[in-house]
Image (cartoon, rainbow over all chains, first blue to last red; front, side):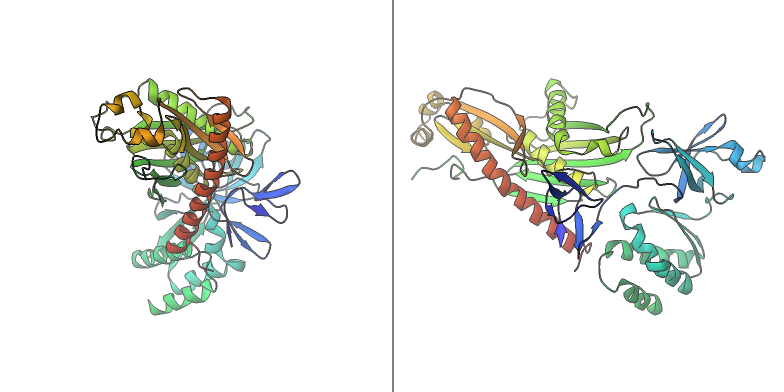
Amino acid sequence: MILIPGDNLKKKDNNSYERENNYYSKYILLVNEDKTTKLFGYYMPEVNDIVIGKVIDVLSNGWLIDINSPYMGKLSLKDVGTDPNDIYTYGDYILCQIVKMTKNKLIDLDIKKREKLNDGLILKVDPARIPRVIGKNSSMLNLIKQYLKVDIIIGKNGRIYLNGDVNDILKAVDIIRFVINNSYKRGLTEKVKEILENK
Amino acid sequence: MVKRFDGREYNELRKINIKLNVIDNAKGSAIFSFGDTVALAAVYGPKPSKMSLDYDKAFLRVRYNMLTFSTPERKKPTPGRREIELSEVIKRALEPALLLEEIPGSIIDVYVEILNADAGTRTASINAASLALSLAGIPMKDLVIGLAVGKVGEKIVVDLNKEEEDYDSEKLRKDPEKSKYIEYYGEGRATDIPVAIIPSEKKFTLIQLDGEISNRELNDALNLALEKALEIKNLMKSNILKHLSSSGNFIY
């Protein structure tokens, strides 16, 4: 069942607001046996999340990173070291982890992987559907990796990095688009397996 | 039996047309039309602001613009007094329905373009913008519904078109073809009242009034608006469901 903002919900959860002891939905929601899922959304940073960030400014003591969310992240130079090879410039994509978040939503990042993610393809998808691309216990991700020779890194903020054989990358992009567009079909993993076997 | 200029009943809306997610680059977008009035809205964000984060809610920025070809005579593309005013009016109509305190300090941009104007552009803009906001995943209490009610002559009607907005029984009398409409509308001129409503709370977020109307008539008109707002909301909901199932986003 699909709810739009303002529709009645039975119980309180993250996707509802309260008015006069009743709960109402605040997003376009998919409801499945009391479990509600957002269909469209933005990425809200949380500590320990792994995200793919883009350098948008170079500061004297670090970098300002766009993490595709309402808030910007900051990466300090002291976390990276002083090796000139580690210096990032405008437009570089890097894999980061959120280590600290203050009340004022100042986000401290640490690098998860030293290398830049510039040599592959960055795919931007709706952050609300990232869990489906990963699948239960990363089953979907493993399935794609099993059939195609590609490196896939998924940032929780809606950016997906792909690297490897060009033809396999294109196939993987098709598969990911399929998963995103059919994200609430049942038995999606089996369907994806079928497509992968035919390719 | 004489009816309104375009053959509608007093409580009949113009034909409503809704298209969702028409712009790929935007987070959410929608086209909403009341008859010949067509509004396109696109939402970007929430995105970070470089300003201080000491605010307790997000900034909503609305830009309303009429395209040069939207009116019978070419409109100058520079934003004038009217555009700036309507941007603010639309922003204030939408703000009470949004839960902006959930994303403090960020910026939400709403761009509204009028593709064709035939009275009621601000109400169509509000509808398009609230659809686009919901598709962008911005937390909101309810969809905001905009519609116009008014008094044409002595008759309370809903969703006025341009011809009704310019109604004047004195002028009409000189026109032999149209003088029959005086029988339906009555003497006098037109009063246009655009309103915006949060249907679930029965709350008005916008009331503008241009003309003369008595207290009792205003009450009748606003009640009519509340009733019609629910109708528009149901239509919006069915369009959202249709869009989700046709685009393959949702198959249960």
